[in-house]
Length: 374
Ligand code: KQY
Image (tube, protein in one colour):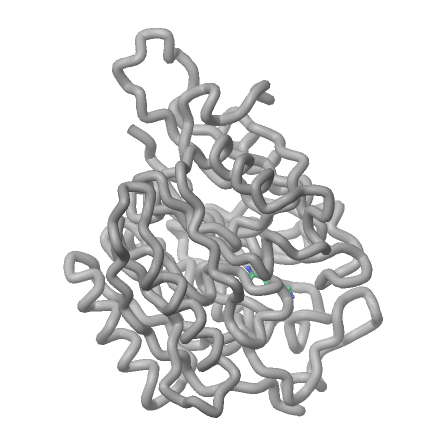
């Protein structure tokens, strides 16, 4: 069902990721120009992420008709596998941004307590600058998920991917100028107009803009979910490097400076926790050669810097599902920092995150939480 007007008009807002979920949605990788060896390695990593999350909340994996049987065979029984066609498998960006109605005392409020925003999508920047040429199937994913769940839908004409926003549930949104103000997304909208849309769709009162995302995150033009996220209201984790010769250093320092000066919607200064990036990691020749690149997607070449960051984790009910890249030094350090940041949650590291980052994102990018609602 399509709802007219904005989520805020109807009393909805986007809850923070740490609020209770009724489940999680994940896609299934298969396109051979993005996932080496026809996705077999990435599929194992996606399956490990899905299995890890399913210990804490119900998981739905969406796989194409060609891949349904394979996905079913690689996933634990308790995971629901839904047949769904898609151009690629980033449900954070192509699935619904769920919003909930908080005003439980409102007697007029008889509708669903949960709805989904169906943002417009252009394959991460359109035909000339995006990741792939045809996103017609991705454009239908949100509608399909909401139909399966029988939830109302708020369509929006603005191009926006879920990985480009984080909210604290108390009125603040974090995002990057590099992505949201990029001319390959919404060239007709000013910064002020984009802020206004975020306010009336997410229910936020203040937007904190970081200038850039993670170095090397060219696929998404710097999604926020690789560089910075909320731990709880007033506290953020920031992708960091101590290596001044790494181009990431300048970006982390720049973000630190903005965050240090910022106040959130409640007027609080932010506590900033640094989370060191792995590597730096690069695509190898062997990895690049196992891709079948036919011109329908942006070339992925040996030597390219991988957009690898530990900030790209998923907050499940009672747990943090965190990427592990096989980096002897920084994998353990990330788990340590996350366990201090989230003392009440089990920290679950998932090995094989390199296979996901080879495709351009990580655990947060492939997941989409569905809130339980009030
Ligand atoms: O990181 C993400 N949210 C998605 C990355 C898309 C990459 C496509 N090659």
